[in-house]
Image 1 (cartoon, helix red, strand yellow):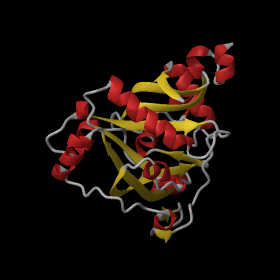
Image 2 (cartoon, one colour; image 1 turned 135 degrees about the vertical axis):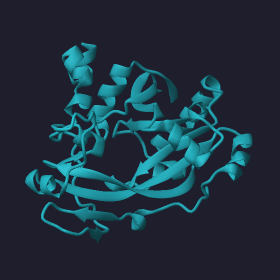
Image 3 (cartoon, rainbow, N blue to C red; image 1 turned 90 degrees about the vertical axis):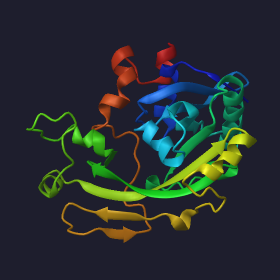
Length: 265
């Protein structure tokens, strides 16, 4: 198993055919392919989420965007053996050390909103740094990021991003708002930066979250208050991309195919 650069279009189509979320991060800098016997079996992207400088300086006030990368997408073929994703992570860390020596930390989130506490990062010895509550909207059965939805709502004030939906719009458009946990993980790239964790504003430890720690706060269109539940309140369906179509169809619109096989043809 080796990691090497892969064309962004190939990586995008690979992810969109396999990942639970077809939406690709906009601030991606590196598209890495995981190859076994010269066959592409996995993809991992490196870059940043929204507000990258804010993200790192909230953890390390003295560091900057250039000091870290965040895992954007990671997925493999379903027929790969158990623990293959942990092996891919290990190969990625080696790739960063060999090719991106200025990177001090690899940072990532486990998406508790879709029921993932981060077992793959735990298996790869990442350190856990607590969780935050974050929200998404469920519209027509599709999980939609607040920023994406803001751009689609009626906007009469000339604002670039618009507003979040108000209570009337939530009812009218039958939108459900869901809060869930995002679990924070980090991997220091060497012993020096492991020691530097002492300067972090976060408490990094091995007290990993498990399935029992997953929770959701749900407010349906007709509700006036949120309901707390430990059962995921929606089904993740990557085929539903009506409201995320601009992002998801980026390759298809430009190259005329959403199929990895057809792309090579």
